[in-house]
Image 1 (tube, rainbow, N blue to C red):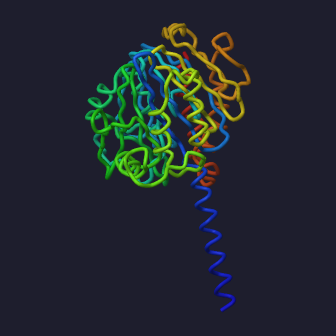
Image 2 (spheres, rainbow, N blue to C red):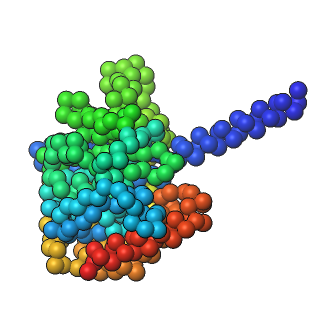
Image 3 (spheres, helix red, strand yellow):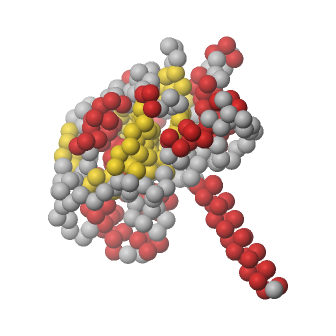
Length: 373
């Protein structure tokens, strides 16, 4: 009997550790605040301390799709390819190197970010081009200026490649007019919440409609349950974010950008944080390693294809406007961020001890070498 109790306690302990780990890892949050005077997106990237770069992406650049198979193959795989020319410049926040962002804002005010969502998958379609999820974000920033354009483009969208053996994500999209959408792949098909079906412009790590329904159980939204605003846990972030953005007033003597950062900290501070002023085309950001708030004004960025691609380390300790501190992005610098970023983004020792990782580094090196020519 004593032995059985010990086994049971051990199992409970292991399950508790698993829950704590997941509670810590998957706690990303995105929201939009808007009025006639401002339109802001706030986003918490909750994962772990991460390397990364903030990149100025050019317009009028010819690009090709990158699938996971392309990344890890010795030879160019026999699969459908696609090309496009970027219509718009953008500022992106990249863990995995050039053209592989986690989120970004383009010069027309379109903001796109991915957030982990369990049990997400794409339906296999060998006739359509495949695109790694991070490049899919850059593809949207390159080609569209409004939420509606993104939604309309989903019909011809390439198949999204997620990390192998790992759940995928859903996407929060917003534009300069304050429109938002939650784009989710449910049972392999796109499910869109937008306009009337997205009355609360918040997205976390649960299915949008399920979190919206749960929110209505709390008193501030007509329910009977008490919503704890003191909690910094993963639980009920959607509802807490909704409460905070509904209760902001400029009469509170705090500027909208500062308030948005306060909301990010209040619901569960991320290792990366961004507030995107989509109305005025300015991004404000900080990280757990670079704690000062930095900013980039897209209106003064040179997105010409003839201009050098510039970047700044996301963990820089600079403060305020960092445009004067942007550096030239080289293939060697990008290689370094690829080597640092992939093991953080995708924990898979088997991959990093295999030839596939050698091919991945080589293929991205060659892709970026061609991009920077």
